[in-house]
Image (cartoon, rainbow, N blue to C red; front, top):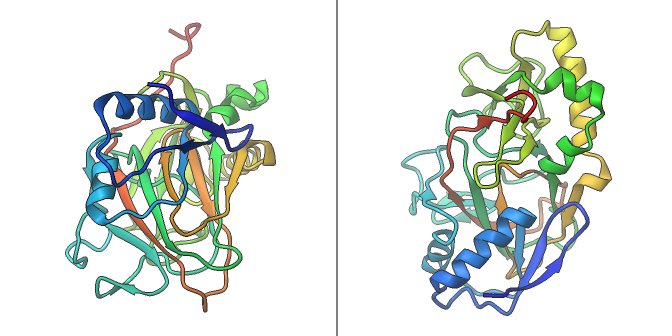
Length: 282
């Protein structure tokens, strides 16, 4: 079927109009949504009023539901994370306040989330925006010298949630979860190359001296976070966003902690990222 799509920006993103997510979604519509998701990497649905079961059903258009790996056993609904600064379901929400650097969800595990669906229940009057960066565009626009230095490298990802969940630490705890993935990956749906690094969780380039690794990573972070790579979403209550976790990185702007911010998150199961090999290299 043909969806009504409105581009959100030059880098990525589209608003999908004319769909009520409370209603069952046909197989034909689900296929069209997946195709749009792989093309635009971020899909926005405005003015939705959905319950938990509606959101679960919507997630299944894109893949299997993947429960959060943090705080197991503490949630009333173990497959749901509330990104919130208030108590929801008897528990204070996760990542309750402050700005947060660009990152890729669960890249510090062998199997990385395929994506996620966020539903806005309460949002502050200002701030708390989500920025999405295009990892595909970032790779395509890399200067040749940078591309040559990173193309066949691996990166170690670490997330020190307990010490600093929001900003990259200078020395992560040794027991923080970590995983190694290629710096340039092939998108599992399209096969296209994507730059797979992010400021919050990319700790080092494997096999490279620490100082050299740090200098190169900083160049890559700065390139990925250039304005032309970014779509900044200003939340409204009732917004639903589904993002492609391998086609994007995302970050959060600061906001007044005295104002409520509650978003219900469900993740889409992913896979282990595979290295991109150009035709010339193959």
